[in-house]
Length: 139
Image (tube, rainbow, N blue to C red):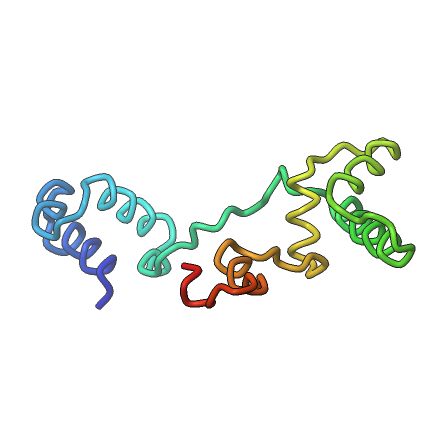
């Protein structure tokens, strides 16, 4: 029996109060109340944990803008020009599309169009050793 089912049955079958169930099972009273109300509305479907994922993302960048960012990136790279987030943001502004540099970066990274920049540890190991200095003495 799932934990949610135990909590609901303690209220419905055993007739315990929300406070008593919460104290007995170490959960909050509001959780017991929420589960009981959900069980009354949904029946046995309330025993399954609910997703915390939002149903929608109203602030998500529209798909048309996302695809335009990727097309601009591909065109700039093909022409051998600077194809960074600042450049693309400026070009979109000229087209009347307002978006942040961070959004452009996230979209390009999510689409696999940006190589991961070297981290501090990678940058340290990628440097050629200084002449006359043993690499183990550099750290």
